[in-house]
Length: 237
Image (cartoon, rainbow, N blue to C red; front, side, top):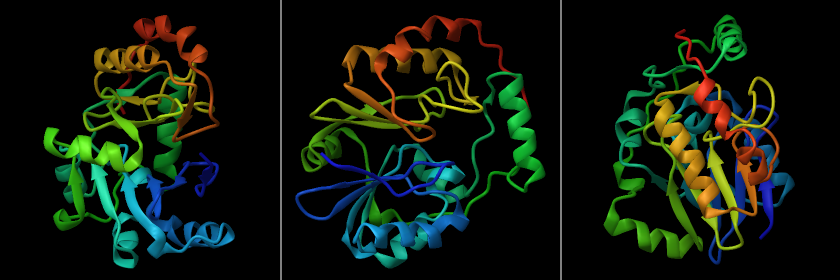
């Protein structure tokens, strides 16, 4: 399957061709909608061609222009049940902590550039949601030709998508590049759950992992770094 990244260096937004229309995995920051449309046009994809939006979790860099997307297409949003209230609030949860000094410094720099509150336009579009309860999940997986994986730890509502060819879109369950160290994301709500999610990823044995931040990588990178999670010290903002 051809994977197109219509995001930028900061946030990856992947788009895949389905039997009918396209699947978009995450949006970007609120101000990135205009550049997102340009990238779609470059690939000859129209907004109205997007049939589904897969939300890996409800953070400002993943749901930032979700409202504008829904205003311009008929797509349904696939999301974790706990993402519903988080979208309605329009702000990241601050339950977690930074995963090291570098992550903490990066978060403080983001604050200097006006990103410290991590707010985004609240989204309250229940008529457009496909909430992943047990009844909905199997039908959605059939439509997407993949398996939806719960990957809590970074956030409670984190999910990933495993395609039949072994490709895994992991959201922020892992990162690849600055300011991440050892493929660990820079913000974690629950460290124990986060490590379990890495174990889940290793057990499903993906052929390649596509994170929301950084380039795709292989499961061996998680295998050699998973023991380092136990040594992580979390720092409050």
